[in-house]
Image (cartoon, rainbow over all chains, first blue to last red; front, side, top):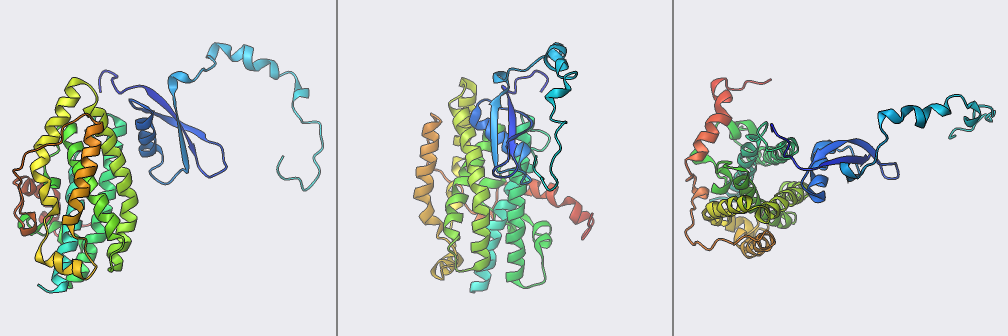
Length: 96
Length: 252
C-alpha cells in the first residue's frame, strides 16, 4: 500500500433510522460506485448501524477552504439580531 | 445407515463447508489488497464461522455422544471432515480467492433457498437466516469477478486462470451419498444433484458478463464425502487446531 493505487475516494453518508437525515461518517476507496457502496456497507454498517447508505465521489464535493473562515463565518458574530434569542418561548413547547 | 447417522453426516457437510471456507478467508485478515477489502473478507469469514457454529452444534446434538461444536471443529482429523474439496483450496492470489468464493457461493445460495423448506426446523431456520448473508456474499464475489474479468489485461488473465484452476473441484460440491437420499425422501435434505444445472446457468451468466470463458475440461476430483481430501486440508487443520490440541479445553 506504499503508493496510493486504491482507487478514487468516496464520502459515505449513513442514515441511522428511517426518516432521519443521512450523516457523514467517513470515506472509502473504491473503483466505482457499486463497489463503493459495498465497501461502505462493510466498513461502516456491519454492526447494524444503518438503514440506508449514500456514497458520493469525494471529488464531486466543493468545500470552503480554511482561508474562507473569516469572510464566510465571522460577520455573523456581531449581529445578534440574527439569532432568535429575543423571543420568549411559551412553556410546554418542546420541539423548537 | 440410520436417519440419525445420515443427518449427522449432512450437518457435518454443511458445517464443515462454512468452517473451512471461513478459516481460509480469515487468513486474508491483515493481508487484503486494500483496507476496505480486508474488512469485507474478514466480515464474510465471520458470517461463515457463525453458520458453522449453528450447524456443528446441531450435528453434535444429533449425534448425541456428548461432543459439542468445539470438539467437532478442533478434535477431528482430516479424514473425518466432510467439507467439499473446493473450500479447502489455498487462497492463491486475490483472483483465486474470488473464484473459489464464486463457485461456492452460487452453490450455497441455491442450496439454502431450497433448504428453507426443510422439514427439519433447525435446518430450515438456519437456511433462512444464512440466505440473507449469502445473498450479500454473492454480490461481493460476482461484482469482483466482473471487474477483474472485464478489467485490465493482467486482471483478466489472472481471473481466467483462477476460474480454470478451481474448475476440477466444482463437481464435488454436488456429490451425494446414500444417506442424503434417505434425507431427501424425508423432505429434510436438498438433493444437491438438482442444483447443478441452475449452478451452471448462474455461473455462465456471471462469467459472460465478466467476459470470461466457462471452463470446458471434464476431469473432476471428488471424494470429500468419504473423507478423501487434498493435501491442503491437513495443513489448514494443523494451524486451526494447534492451540486446542496443545491445551485441550483452553478458553480465553
